[in-house]
Image (cartoon, one colour):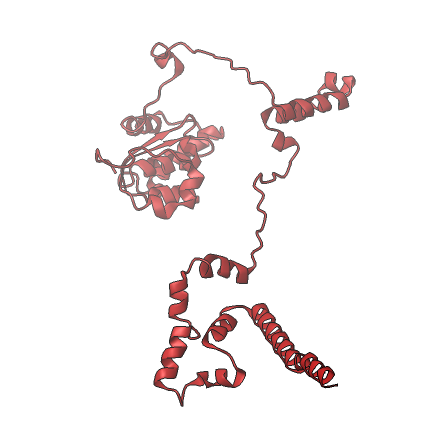
Length: 308
């Protein structure tokens, strides 16, 4: 990670994220660990203290304005965190410093100056205390920039509605409305939740699969390819009849009185085409039958009249 070509060199995170993603942070050998508000790890029984103490890290730096809040045990927790090998025994630290200083804090005994100077001597290599007068000359002038952010249309409507509901007496006494107005100006979703609707609308498309297959496949296939795999083409029937006259299945065409071209037209079309061909054939046969009966009659009557 600390090479020049590393994908990142600094990670800024929070205590909670470190606890949650400990398995990812533990994979890296850190060069420096800097903890702000280090009093957050003042307890040796806390998960934060135990987790961060287990990190593989070369250097550690703690920043805190209140290293001691309740007891000297909190100070030992911080000292053990930065130098575990030196401040390894809490019992010895408690025997040397904690009892005397904590007793003085409770006004039970007077403080031993010898113990106090010893504590200062031990802490001096590890603690840098700087107060405001030490650093104020090094600090640059504070610059304040005020940026006005206009309310959105929705925020304006909510704000005006809120102002109309608040009574003047309540507003003067700051009893209601103040917190709500801040929330509206911050973000309207915090004041009035509104479920978001997706702007995307998907209209389901209906397809008729048989027609789709026909339209995308059958119509795009050339007549040559259709005839290549179609057994009722006149060429194929003629070839089969020529080679296998007795065993071919096309012998039924003789019984039906259909030619090779008729078979091709019938089986190439759909069911409607086949039925239409059937009725046309039946009608033609019926017309031919009537012609055979009706046509000779006028000739017979003419002959009969001439005979008379």
